[in-house]
Image 1 (cartoon, rainbow, N blue to C red):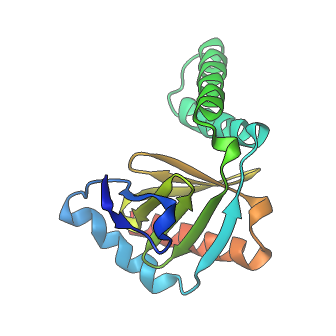
Image 2: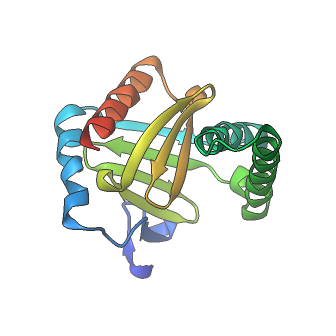
Length: 169
């Protein structure tokens, strides 16, 4: 993270890149996303604790069910991982920040008062749709996007991005 790289809003802090770059083969999928998606989505998100834990509960449920462990162990891991996510939400002050997203053919830009994060499409491994919104699964972490922040046309564009990411993998 360098202080010399600032985004379009110089007062928003340093620009971060989610990954330091991967193998050359990983970025090949970005071309198909660029060819498929013509829209640029711009929206703002201010997460609530209930909304964030709902995303984490559903995403953890998906990951844990794939492991095919017992019912008691599944319930325990779901509760433990969701509680840890809620604790991190509170400790990191995620509910106090407004995040501005721009999603286009080149990738995802998330900016807030603490800085700017750039995520190229090569680092997006999946876009999952849950009952409360979309979950962008990245090489390192996730980005939840609630439905309440998207218009109907933006949700359709997100579906197109999801299809393109799935086809690129």
